[in-house]
Length: 401
Image (cartoon, rainbow, N blue to C red; front, side):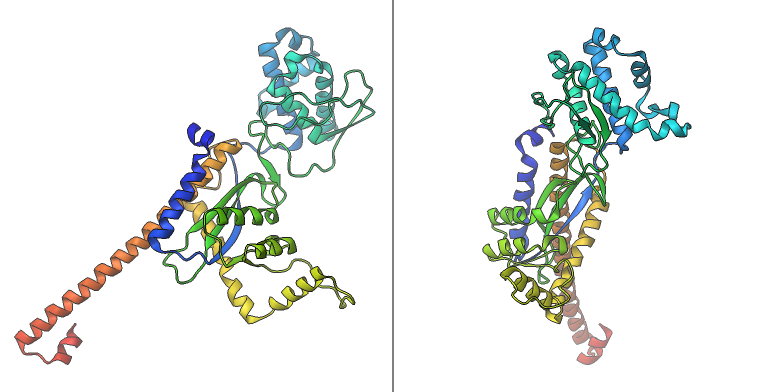
């Protein structure tokens, strides 16, 4: 797994396996469909308050291990609070309504105090847990009347370039009302992000053949992502991957999120017709001087009301069944990994395995049909010879057969 992660071999395995299977089964790739699905990593889901508290606890554990004298200079209140197990953090305020209502603000101020206290201490600033502490604080909180300084160097992939409060400033700390989805969800998996509908973790874009003449439909391209990525931004990436591997379709079906005007135009540049419902409501009254984009959207709205368009688009829904089967049979709901590289490698391998299983099922059906046909032919020969021997009329032994 380490080698797969470092050399990005899982993606190559998926591409090589898929290419071989498409050739073996003579799969037509001219019609394809696209959708995404959420994948959880092996991490706990934290509330915002617990996330900040766990970040403090993990920093203090590392501080005590490597800088014990600095740890002992901290107030007893902080040391005693965060010496508890992660699951028992803040248990002392769980039944106190007044303390519970102000707990998040209290934890935010403690994070701020720790950052102020150790800013400038290079031994502490180089700790990964301190870098995470700064990143999580800047994502969850705001500071007013403070001096901005550059973030510390980062060697673990965490963006800590946001300003750190100056140790000598008089600052007011407040918790952000909204943070967006592209933020740390758990210090144990700092690359996982958040989707407002599906939760924390990752997602994967899946493209599948949809030509009804194929013996079986195979996945042609997959794109693992973090959960905060917008589906609409994946179209160009998927088309680039399909083009690189010689699998560009004539038609690509997607839901509304993929069907932005820019994506339709970008697909057309690659001679791909992106078929997707138009998002938003049409204008109540006709626009007097519509621009080119408005004319295109109006034409698409008219097209999607036709029976021909509906018949073509109906096959898009089948990819949802494929995704459901993939997740049930491969366990790609919650993977036993953390971190982007491990998660992405696992997704590629599971989806390569799915293609193999579908291809094997098609080959077994094909072989079974061949065997059945041979059995019918042998039976007919036997019955015809038996009929001659028994002097039975041809029609009568056909009925017997």
